[in-house]
Image 1: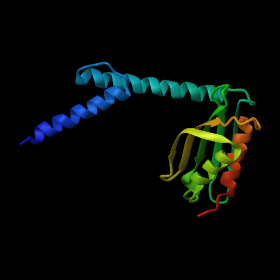
Image 2 (image 1 turned 60 degrees about the vertical axis):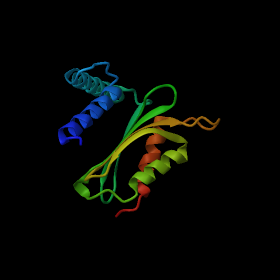
Image 3 (image 1 turned 180 degrees about the vertical axis):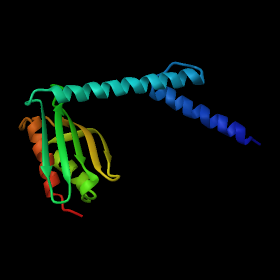
Image 4 (image 1 turned 45 degrees about the vertical axis):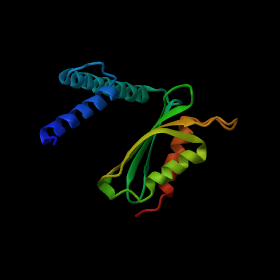
Length: 166
């Protein structure tokens, strides 16, 4: 019969293996794996700060910010160009001070992406209190129109305006 202590050690060992894999660590002991994970998290935070700074300082043709006021909420939408391959970083924030975000807002924004030919490569969204969406989208190349940051922003703003209130 395996003791509870052995089960706990086994579970910890498995979690450390996963952490080691995710952070690309080659360390063997627990302390080194955790130190590598901490360094990895710091690197990711620096990359995020650098991307945010680049977006903020980009020229108007490469990053735009729009703010729209709605009856129930205020929202901000920013779109930045990540690279020359047609990838965009889209940030949507809807303040909770004017009430909860409309039901279906995330679906409306994602449908807008699809309508303009933007494929979502990665996204993170939260609807707890305020609404926040950060997505990396890539232009679908099919011989059609080329998407620019302004077009993405306008599509998202329109999706927010068209989303029915709760």
